[in-house]
Amino acid sequence: MKMKKINIVRFAPKGSNSFIETLTAAVHDYFRSNNISPYANAAMWLKTAIMLLCYFVPCIFIILGAGASNLWLFWGLWFLMGWGMIGIGTAVMHDANHGTYSPHKKINIFIGHILEVIGGYSVNWKIQHNMLHHTYTNIDGLDEDISSTVLLRLSPQQRRYWFHRHQHIYAWFFYALMTLYWMTAKDYLQVIRFKQRNLLHKQKVSLPKALMHITWSKMFYYAYILVLPLLFSGQPWYFVLTGFFIMHLTAGLFLSCVFQPAHIMPNAAFAAPVVSGDSRQMKDSWAVHELVNTINFAPRNAWLSWFIGGLNYQIEHHLFTDICHVHYRKIAPIVKATAASFGLPYQVQPTFLRALREHSRMLKILGKK
Image (cartoon, rainbow, N blue to C red):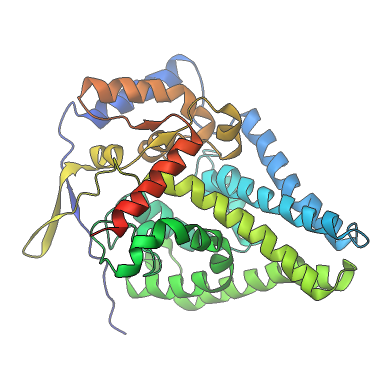
């Protein structure tokens, strides 16, 4: 089969004494002068334990039949598992697969495989998120985070259909299905697509090996998440399936509400590359491109920031993927001040609800002609 290489774009050179060079020096000086490691600290490890318990303790209770005589308790345990799944995704798996738990690669890989335990595939995640999304943020055709069903138009460069005028209403339904689709069909379709685009080899994985890994991990996932509750929970199969859907709809909707307002917003640049012959060139350097396509939100909401793994500090995360999220709040003033000194925007929505409203407004804008 002929390989279809990814149609990459080139960013403008960063230049000497550039924004990113100045910022990197200032951030590194912060860690050095305070004698702080950029990796996980004790608070991060404690959070990891809490998130894992929030997912696995309700799961054990379900399997042991704790909700056998009380349907609302039974479904409540599935609902709690949904929040545990969110916490694992944002505050455990995410950092591990960026390599920010430890300077030791094997520790990060080991923790990153928690994604397989909750039904995903870490290789696909690293390609989609680390390689494509973080490099080509909001660039249509490269950033898979904005490549969704044809029913959603998430970029000005994407084709518009008449039904997109209503997407600000129905998009939330598709957002809720995100993890359910991920745990069923997405990993298989995605790994085949990544093979066709010659991306699997960068992770040193062959397609047969990847397909086998996905199949075995999903068999394990469905064995403990559905088969064991069906056998031992004491509830009929249709109540078990309802609980399973409650967990995934909760996780899918909230995770989408965390990730979408970080980039698909009215103030995001969505700049398209300039095509010249066989090359595609961006006007901005990579760091500036990330800055103008990324928005923080709710910086004063300490609880939200703790729970979602600092992803409300999305600017800091995109510029410094090698730093654990527990440090974002401290380096945020450095990033903001450096951006201001270079005349660059530092976009922040004051609250989570305000960010969601602006994202909904962007969906409405993209749905118009």
